[in-house]
Length: 635
Picture 1 (cartoon, one colour):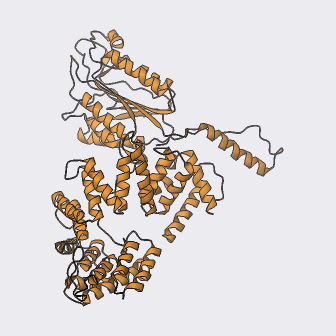
Picture 2: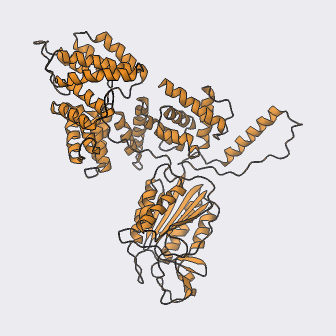
Picture 3: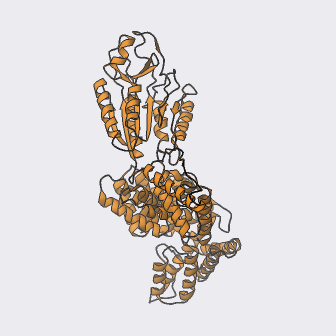
């Protein structure tokens, strides 16, 4: 994630309008702001995130069960959102001091985000907070400072590094382990005022004691680790989520608390893409209006042909078209020279019992194609539905799939998932790989039938073995997520790769995301970028947005704000929810350079007549909405 620019008010003094005309003054102000911002914005590289994670459990006096586990959990969560993590588990004072010094030196090397997490015993003495290392032998209050780590010294180390943002998280408000041998020490930790640009988070309110927890992790660390990966929420909202969860788990007995002096927005995970989940096979849904019309014209030109090659060419030209099933059926019809009038259809089409079924099916497809092109949508879909149903009842497998889809999506019929399951099952029983794939998703998510990951896995595998790329993608997703099966990234990549090579855009996108996560593997990263470009070219808005992210951050590619702006606007225009959120709600998570290029691009396209200053003011936002409206109409 690219850092948020924090600037103070920029003022110009000594400028005389008597010396310059209004136009020249406006020009100078624009240039001045641009020059100053060019000095203040983050450098042309991805943000550096450094974390020091410490957890002490094995105390000789009052050992704790969870801090070491908590530290490991937090390290994992922080690595997942791009932090370079140094972990120190069960450390004595010397080891903790050495880790803090090393961390401070690393933090001082660049414009970084620094985070320190500590779990273990912590005490306050005379208003000062101390983190207790292993081996601390404390008999009196005045020995605490000598035998432990002063929190103020830790915060001072971070402040001296001049990192742009510092975060200190303390799950250390556990009860006083030396209460029987010392006096004058209060329960919990004392409140600390956060230095500028710092957020300090406590597991509980000042002066209160946090619970170690009965499970493997403390209530606070478990809740925080679960909230950190939440995409698109600010750091403040992450801690609010954590507070709500801890209050619920402890039944109101523990209230996490923060003190912040942050001046800008920070997102733990602002722009990460998530893989596409399983989706039912759907011809035509990804085609643009122009392509739908083109397919309809192409079909009318070949529908009376007696040549198998004409239908094969149509399938190749419109692999996701509405008429693909019918083209396959016609191709099979004329394949057999011995008996051209025998309609024995195999594979995904099934067997028909009447010569009229294909004609009914073709008529229904044309009505649906007209509806998808904007011609009397509702009426055409209602007219298509009984034709699909009649053809399906006559035994045409392709019609069964379309009928199931109509029930599934409420296209010309009442939305009825149970009927969708029934007709997908009928088509599956006739050997349709596409129907098996669609039925698999209904079992995976428990839609119209009882949820069964085992049955979903069986159907996906059958369909994948029969060559259905959508089922291959769904299999890849199950293996990647460990859903219903043991997580196996090697198997996930295998199925994603096979489906991607067969042209499935979801597979291209998901495979690219896995490859981008491979550390120090430039070959995999190059392949990932290539798959993202191919998926984007095929209309996948998520892939388009991910290209914007990697070009904005300079992650695995050379940073290019012009391309980042192009892809972000393209994804926005393609109705990507994530891109819309980026543009409308949190443009500050994108670099100044990319925001400036967006304004330049909007100006070239005729939507914007303002300056390219990198701020999304009202004029910029009006231009963006005009761009979106035009793109939606064109789509």
